[in-house]
Figure (tube, rainbow, N blue to C red):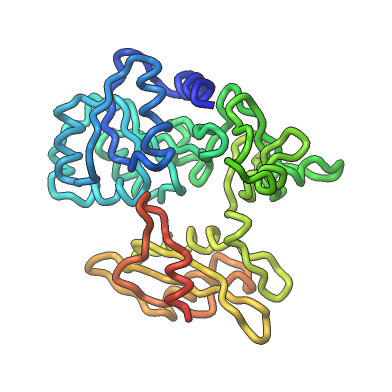
Length: 322
């Protein structure tokens, strides 16, 4: 798996003996070891390991270490862009940023672009690689929200597209196949047989493919909730909320409702110095979403709970929602 991940990564990105990077991701996570570190080791590149994510120190090191690539999650990249020294740092050695974990908001992409740093988003899974797709930096804005196209030795299938009447933009589960797929879960044959079926790995992610072959993750299947018989994908609602100028971060979960079975509850962190009322945000959503996708209410927080890799802790939000 590591070998084929390294080959896929080097074909997709610029990774060779002259490559230089700074790793701030935790080493217990595939993002810390296998997104860039093991491909760099395999190809003779240079890696500077940080013990923890320290935004001011990372900014200095990106310049001093002459990094050619840097990988981070959107939360980290926002913290770097919010640092006072961000405007003064010389990023001329960087080919581009590698972004994973979750989609990067377009305003944040544009902040880095204004500094001359292009953004390359992608998609990965611990069990399958992890580096699976890549969106070329020239398409970062034109194909906003996309995870790009599959890497060279990665085969993909969207389950619903296998029916004769399906067409582009149909939403279905993303299936993956290739030499980078895990042989199974350690001492867990039940989980292995559930994920690996008919030689395809079932990702648990709902995805769609546009007419040009670009993939988009709609949401995790487990994040989806059903309101009045309709499927609601929180990621779609979150993207709309993030388009509001007063919203810095947003997360949506399903909560029980006597009439509709489940409804959405939005959790929002506001931009410093800006504010919006619950009514403002619901009206904003109403202009961009179908009625059944609208959150029932909005909860304002100082910060969203996150795990060690910077992803939103939805279980923590569920506790807040009680």
